[in-house]
Amino acid sequence: MASNSPIPTTRLRQICNDACDAAISTTTVYDHASTQSWNNTIINNILKSLISESEAASSKYKFVVNTTIIQHLSDPRGVGSDGLSGDKKVGRRGMHSASGAFWNNEKDGMWSYKYEGGEGKGMDIVVSVMWVAV
Image: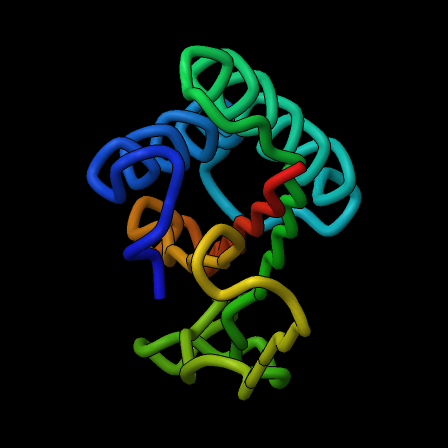
């Protein structure tokens, strides 16, 4: 639901992708101790871009950005595919997230994005962007 977005959705997708790339570019695997830093980097980079690009719009907006980082599961026994110790992937954790709001449907809205670059690093990153016209 982003037909009323103050920034085209193709550009929103690029902003989110760039922010996620910047946050985890040097990372090779999920590291719980780093998630706060990754989230802060992603959110701050997205907000900077949204504010900068929306300043040219005739209407002013407030933005809310939420990020969720989900760790992929590993075999808790630590058994690899060769039967020796290792970190065998067994799938993903289940997750469902939803948002709702009461606002002006013509000017306000929300949009979600799943970053594909975390797949090979043992994580999923989901970004949600909301805007409210002022």
